[in-house]
Image (cartoon, rainbow, N blue to C red; front, side, top):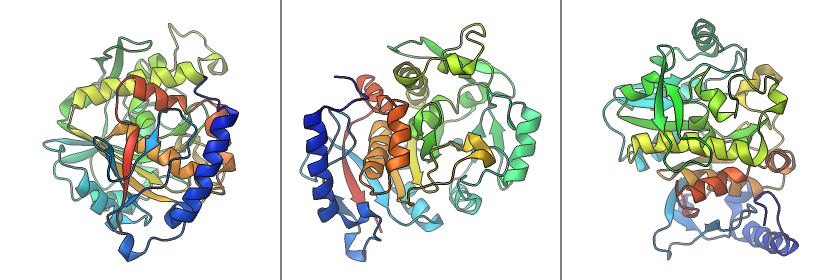
Amino acid sequence: MSNSRVSRRALLRNSAFLACAAMASPFLRGAPAKAEDAQKIDKSPQKTPVIGSKKVGDDANGAAKVYFSPVIDAASLIKLYNLVNEGIHGKVAIKVHTGEKNGPNILPRDMVKALQARIPNSAIVETNTLYQGDRYTTEGHRETLQVNGWTFCPVDIMDEKGDVNLPVRGGFHLKEVAMGKGITDYDSMLVLTHFKGHAMGGFGGSMKNIAIGCASGQVGKKQVHGVVDGEPGDWTQWPAKEKLMELMADSAKAVADHFGKNITYINVLRNMSVDCDCAGKRAQDPTIHDIGILASTDLLAIDQAACDLIYNQPDNKDLAERIESRHGLRQLSAMAEHKMGNPQYQLIVVS
């Protein structure tokens, strides 16, 4: 059965699941969590139509822990980070999508600033872009960082001084990926992601943040997009759908394997346009409400949980359509096949 399609039986089952979730879990409908919900396990079933993915209760052994706060502010961000930072040490890379100039949906800088101040010896890391936008050259990228307010800490454009090849063990398509050379200067990484839609990937979560975001602008990003020796030259002819998701999984696996246990993930589900922050001011206005913040040491579990939360919202039509029309859910099944995490997770509400 295709990962991008759901059988009639699965659709009926998921419809029943959604009804149960709506009754059992008020925060999934966007209602604020009450104080007594803190550190509770949400047992409502998952909704994302991906076979083999499952949200479990607190009686399951081996399930990944995904922490959730419905409050999106600096205090909640710091609280969740402190629950998943056991592997963070030494020189810390904070991988953030810093966005094109004046993008309306970028993560709030004051919120990121408050978290970064709590992480010793840390810097934001980025790479230049493959497309010719505001961040295509290092010079233009640094100007864009200034415009967008990323001025409160060091920002390392990791491919400024070249590339480094990281191996992909058992990749679908790639044996290695060219990353920004600066990635090897760091002992650990926090992947701090604005979760949103994406024109080609369907959605941009933690996996996409490191898969494309750490790849070097003129070499690695071509590899991740399936461009070989400049062909195909027209981006509309680049590999998409399942192959693109598999290429991203290969690249993300190279980064995750490089850091091992010294990498952790946060997804912020706010201002979720169907467009990525690389669209800048052209991004469509969000049509789904803000949901909250997720944190986990498990890459697959956190992106799975983010998709589950979105699919459980009554106003998810546009974002769900963007995800499915691009076959974006293949990101999740590709990560599962690569053993990049656990699709079974506990959602632990923290308030």
